[in-house]
Amino acid sequence: MNTTDTPIEQWADRVESVLEALESLGPLRVVVLAETASTQDAALEFDREKQGIVCITGRQTGGRGRLGRVWADDYGLGVSMTLGLRLEPFEPHLPLSVGIAVAEALSGLGLDGNLGVRWPNDVVDRETGRKIAGILIERTAAYSLVGIGINIHQQPADWERAGIPNAISLAQFGVYADRLDVIGQVLGCLDERLAEPADRVIDDWMRLDTLVGTEQTFMHNGGRISGVVVTVHPTSELIVRTKNGVVSLPAATTSLLHGS
Ligand code: BTN
Image 1 (cartoon, rainbow, N blue to C red):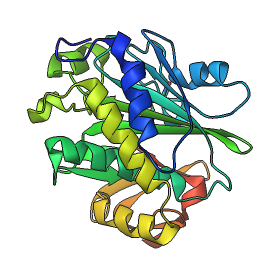
Image 2: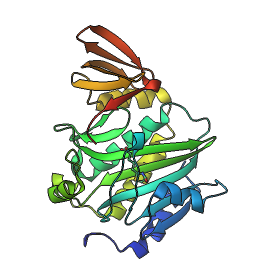
Image 3: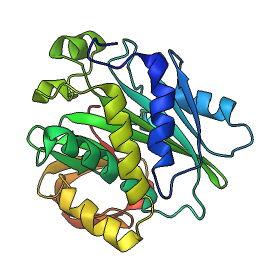
Image 4: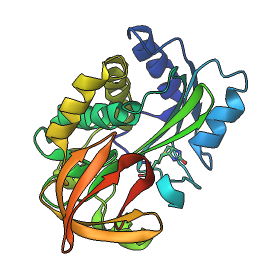
């Protein structure tokens, strides 16, 4: 928790009024929890009928990330939220829409030009590659849990304590935001981005890409492939120049190896 934040007792009302003004996201039930292990699990628990929910916590003690990683926010310094949504049909570009929406929301809070996306949908500092936000989408049939974690108030000592050297927060850019304002911005941007067609999302995503031209290691078919990224077609293939030639890696079965 941080003294610049609106008290958590006021979050639910404000989020409800933000949602009322949106065009395509709602109606969604709003659940705000002072503390929970993971908003992914809490969202499912509070939305058993799968009608639609926004579940937000002030402090997440057992957050999870993609590929079995941990997402730590035990001290309540970031935004941890999950939207339970009927995204039908679930199209491959939807995870990209979420990444763009989060990048845009943070850009609107003062980071314009600083941020990019790292395939598939990490939001990172363009200059250092440090991660400011991560997205986890878990699906069962037509219902998707869209988990969003954003680093807001953390300082370098917080990353040292958590053993996460490759992360960065809004505060480290000199932006001191109220977590509730960040949540409101993210919901507004999601409302617009989730309604957009695939071609527009993919074009915008490619403009934010930070991998092209960099040396990376990918996992594919149980093996590691390292080289310079030539092109990222985020929903179809990644083209990499390795020391043995240029290879095309299918997006659906490839993952990026990195530190956080
Ligand atoms: C990643 O970068 O690997 C994804 C991180 C996703 C973290 C968010 S925080 C809210 C939601 N609850 C979780 O347990 N995880 C997601």
